Length: 216
Image 1 (cartoon, rainbow, N blue to C red):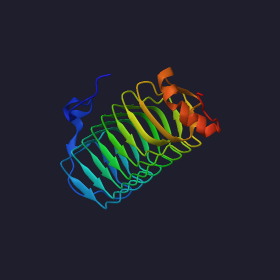
Image 2: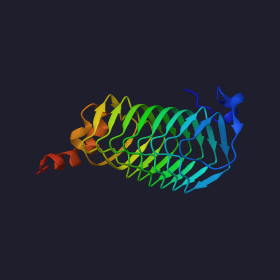
Image 3: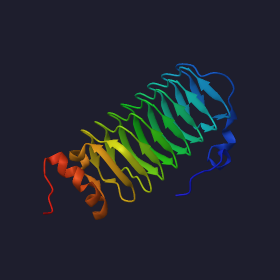
Image 4: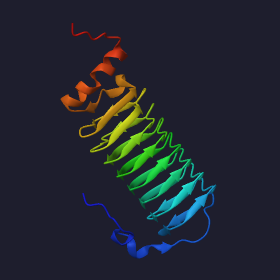
C-alpha cells in the first residue's frame, strides 16, 4: 500500500484549509491543515478531528482526552507528554512521527498505520488495536499491558523492553520484527512468529515458566 507523503496526496486535499489559532475543548475540526506550529499545554478534550492533516507539528503536554479522530494524517509530528487517554483513531496515518511519555491507555485504534516512527515509553494499557501496522518503527518501553491486539503487524520494527502482561492477541503478526519482550510471555498465544524468533525468546520464556536450561 502506497502511503500519502504530502498533504496534496490525500483524497481530501482540496478541502484542507490552513488552521490558525489555539485548540479548545469540545472543538470540531473538519478539513483543517496544521503545519509548522507548536501547541504547548493546550486542552482539546472531547474534540472531533475529521479529515485533518498535521505536518511538522509539536504537541507538548497537550490533552485530547476522549477525542475522536478519523481520516487524519500526521507527518513529522512530535508528541511529548501528550494525553491521548480514551481517544478513538480510525483510518489514521503516522509518518516519521516521534512520541515520548505519551498516555494512550484505553484508547481505540482501527486501521492505523505507523511508518518509520519512534515510540518511547508510550502507554497503550487497556487499548484496543485493530488492523494496526507498525512498519519500520522503534518501540521502546511501550506498554501493551491489558491491551487487545487484533490483526496487528510489526514488519521491520524493533520492540525493545515491550510489556504484554495480560494482553489479548488475535492474529498478531510479529514476523520481521526484532523482539525484546520483558513481560507477558503468557499472552503471546494468538501471535504469529518465525521459528528463529521463537528460539530467541526461548530462554526468557523458560525463565517465565520456571524452566532451568542446562546443556551439560
